[in-house]
Amino acid sequence: MSAPFRVRENGIDLFVRLTPKSSSDRLEGVETSADGRCHLKARVRAVPENGAANQALEKLVARTLGVPASAVSVVAGGTARLKTLRVVGEPEMLTKSIEAFGV
Image (cartoon, rainbow, N blue to C red; front, side, top):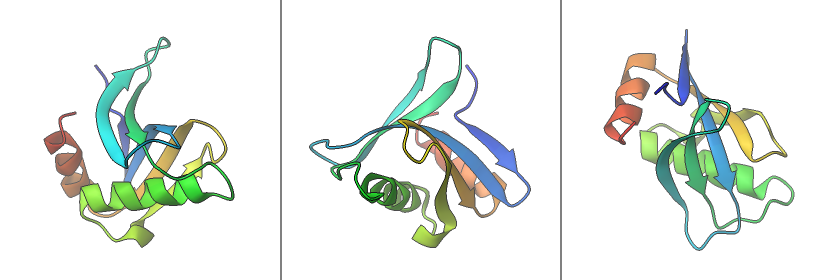
């Protein structure tokens, strides 16, 4: 199985499938789609209006990886379920944090 992230020079790109309007904010592990792409499953309580769900996702990922909220941003898929998040930081540390999560 491939990893749900790509290492960059100054951090990582994290691939996420987001479900808004959930009962709680949580990351649920990794799944592989029919086309073979791997992504992290995430749920947030926020509704997908005015970027609220994206902001909730950024905060959830930042809290989980132990980085400041300002280090996480949605760079692709702003209005789609499948998103790419850019996480700025030490790539090795971020990779270990994701792997510790169970990837």
